[in-house]
Image (cartoon, rainbow, N blue to C red):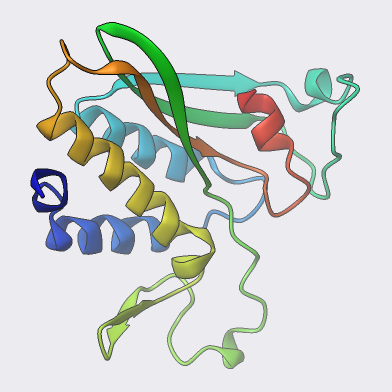
Length: 174
């Protein structure tokens, strides 16, 4: 119960609004990853940022390809380490979104979050910025209620780029 009580719905909405407002189309995930890094630090998690060179990553035999020219693959991770050995739980989400296309097809601008009938609308709200913020909230809640001395293993929140154009961001995280 303490874990559920540690989740602040108003904070979730504010953070979701903030990430939806960033047009994080493939190849331009830097600004959203800067915000995610700040949220990780505010959550009290150990921040790790990884910048992978896409050309270097393309030499990996598991490289899935990319559809958009890129100069960087920014990955953000937040760790909640336990004091005892145990399993590592990864909670992963991606920050990039499909480009919004024709603005005339939107009832409101794609990157201006709007709440209607209790639901937040905007490009990426469901895929996958809502899941990303929920994942961060879960790890943040665990950090708020867990006794680090009794925690076995670690929980790691990971935000990756490049899911919408091939999946190279997850390979960069790995």
